[in-house]
Image (cartoon, rainbow, N blue to C red; front, side, top):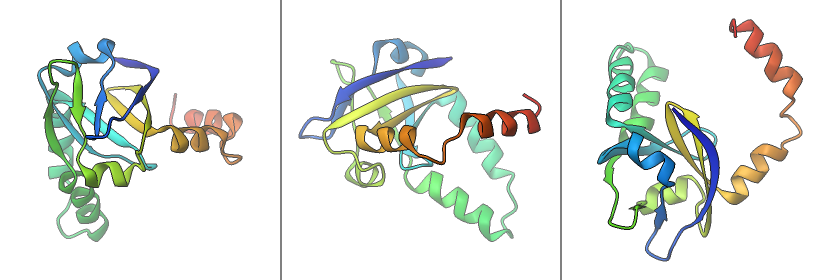
Length: 143
């Protein structure tokens, strides 16, 4: 399980270090793709397979389903760590997440998310983010 929050820099070549605590669970190869809320998602190959199977089951006749599948698959790329534990993030993915210099890498259970520091701070300081509302929504979901 991926948990925690780590701050790293994005170098001039678009590389970022993946926290050591995440590397073993991700394995040698993993998938990096566009995420929701202006971030990037990283999935181990096992978790990517689970998501891929769910996405394959969405009805092709549903326009929203097609858009959602396109969103995840079009930005996806298989990654592997270099000898220093870094990955190179393609330009289109850096643009999607507004990644420039400072990145925040967080563990979210079954996936890792990469945020620009600015977007992460904005997300966490959002006046619309009410912990009471979140708790109520969680209760509605049975959690």
